[in-house]
Image 1: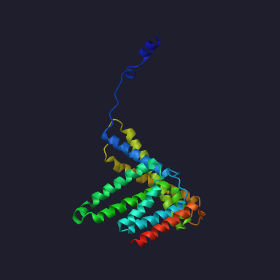
Image 2 (image 1 turned 180 degrees about the vertical axis):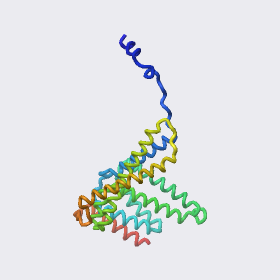
Image 3 (image 1 turned 90 degrees about the vertical axis):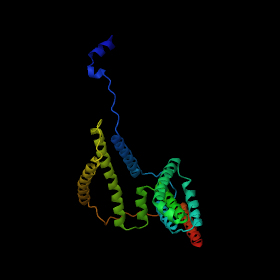
Length: 268
């Protein structure tokens, strides 16, 4: 009896069932952009790497740069084969999620490279193009290994330990922090557009106005940050010394790098 009495008291618009409007392609495109931004901002905000390496971040940076130079200067299959063996030995310790993400990035880069080099392959043959593709794939593996073991905070600390110019370090640090802030602003604006246009078609030309609003908000935010830094006495004379301590893993990584340099030089 009580349920019947309550049903009689409810208004008619609460008793009727309405089907939700299907999301349009433009809304799906907005959601894809929001998801991509969330993943990117999550990676930028990440304070712990996917694989916690035992070596220091400065030694990993030196290893990454030197290995990239060796890969770029390699012109024979034997040199690339030796480099990829050492590189795969390090990649084998990465977790499964990082390996899956690495495989996806590697596949996309190689497909894009093949599309760009397809006219050259058809005219000049596949020999030089094959070495170029192999070199590109190994460079992507090297970059993925460095990103999986080193965060942006560790990268800045490594630059300080290697005594890079202070202006360069502060520029990189501010650029990474401000890129994260811009990404958050862009995510909020796209989410506002998505909520205000539920059940409607979104004109993709609206992204131009979103970028304009992003520019204006970033311009105002830049002024506020600059004034706050000036009031707090932020200057270039601040000395942040990060001591460097050799580890056993750093010595092993350095010996491995020396062996690679010697072997690739002999085989040239």
